[in-house]
Image (cartoon, rainbow, N blue to C red):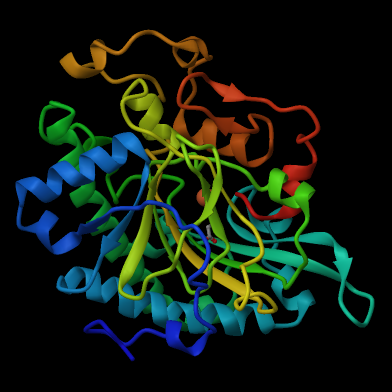
Length: 362
Ligand SMILES: O=C(O)CCC(=O)C(=O)O
Ligand SMILES: [Fe+2]
């Protein structure tokens, strides 16, 4: 049933339901962005301004197909990883190795049949370890065993991201290389590959609300096999599911791009909830590549004719900090919440503890 040049495993799962409203993501072709197709580039820029989410069609591009192949391989690795004994995974816990990189579990209020609390889990592996930019953090033997696949995935995702940044730069009327200079693969950054696993769990309004977030980096490349991701429709405010599509990535923009462009670009609120039937009743995994500005970049609006025309907002009054500080503070819950299109960080009552407990966000 593979509809793409590279075999995918989506068909091994129950199908995404046909009777639910889905998010209106446009599809942008990586191969057309590679060849400089103007209409495609415009469609990409429009999606980046209007929704902040789109499908990136990977088939038909050798880079794209390498991403699909890497994702399928890493999906198998993450299935194996999450099955490992708890004590083994916890040797690589964030508490032990790094505030941001490593393994983390969040226990849920629901229990397995044997009475153990269900959990959502993540494993963050940093780009700088694969690229040799830093002394590697301790990592699980499965990561060591699959180092080359992980490294290739980092290189490929970054190539796709760098290409997208070059298109953004052009539309934002910035000198060539402006965004690239803030995102050099050779420089230390918060970029990472994340394995995500969510336990089978019933719907919970509290968990769904607590999982709402915007990504806080630059561009995110998301591969998933089951539904469960929802975005908040910017016009109707309704939560709508995003359908996983074999051969396509889901790409979304993060808060750093909103900040750098003074709100020209959009980071849309989203969350992960239990998949809708017939995809419920299954453990859900996703594989994410998060890109961030380099650690040393101070997050503030860039200079440029188009950006200068943007009105000053609450965001411009927030204390300036480096991407490294911003990432850390967002991830430990110091700067929590949803980074809205109009204002700054929206701090919501009652969410301060819950967000972290869901384990569904960074
Ligand atoms: O698992 C997904 O589909 C989305 C995950 C996500 O939004 C995130 O990890 O930031
Ligand atoms: Fe996200």
